[in-house]
Length: 81
Image 1 (cartoon, helix red, strand yellow):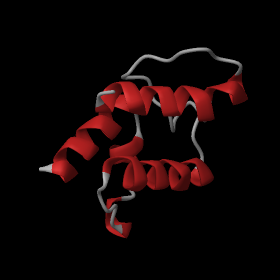
Image 2 (cartoon, rainbow, N blue to C red):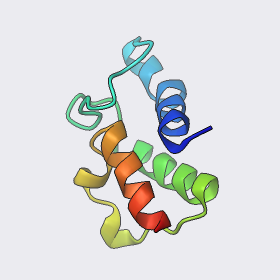
Image 3 (cartoon, one colour):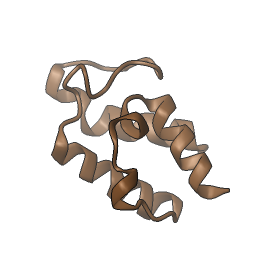
């Protein structure tokens, strides 16, 4: 499974049920829409670290890295380089 598919699946399975949504566009604003809150960010960080073998530093936990599926995928790709 590629990074984009894995991230999208994680977000859909763990956050969309709160808003009774089945799927979401890759560029949809996850934070602004209230789909992911501060606890959700920690879930995402844990998923990224364990699923992709990268370390997320405290200073990297900023909205622009987690605002959308595209942003999360870009962040992971940058960390893997």
